[in-house]
Image 1 (cartoon, one colour):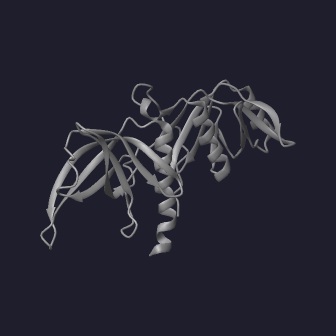
Image 2 (cartoon, one colour):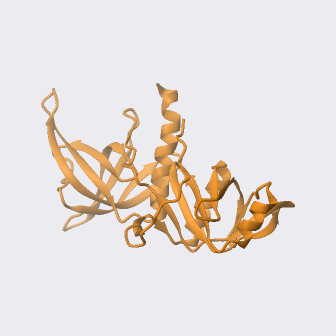
Image 3 (cartoon, rainbow, N blue to C red):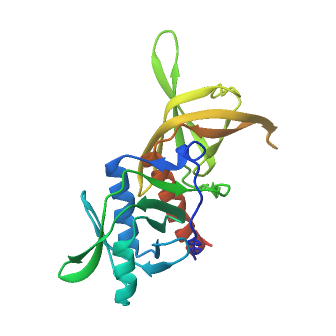
Length: 250
């Protein structure tokens, strides 16, 4: 079962929280569309403490439509407010943005509150990333490009676990030269039912182990570097999807 995300306002420092900020209009519309589709709860703050719980009815490139309060006085205060803070969740990650205006409108013939599509939103993954152990029978593979003097080639490395922050890789001692401190660009991971992820990994640590059969196995802890909003969302969607289906396999 998914946990509820507390819909409290986060105090943001622009410099500190840049990595949580999404500014692409297409990505913003994508996130908000998924919030509408999932029916996630929304808190719309129209003063320092006052808020209404609502739902997102629809989204397009111009803006978004929210279900109004049944209390007309609250709706008037929202429309009159010069600062509104939208707080919801997307794949169990808090989403927050600020708007300076709402207006009374309709959506598919029903009363609604309309907000212009924001210039930016924040996806606030404050806690440690949930680390998902990947299937043993049909493991995920990380395809790592290698540049050699004569040709370009790639290596497939088995993924032990994955999260929104990185991956744990395992390979035979002679398979791939993964060097702690080194970064590897354009690594590809095919995430079933979600899509292909392409990004940079940095090897943070390496452990060499011996199996009972005498083989040498290396395990590398890697961190994703400089992910854009779309890649972060893709990874979070995969982890969340697998969390939902995992109990069925027990």
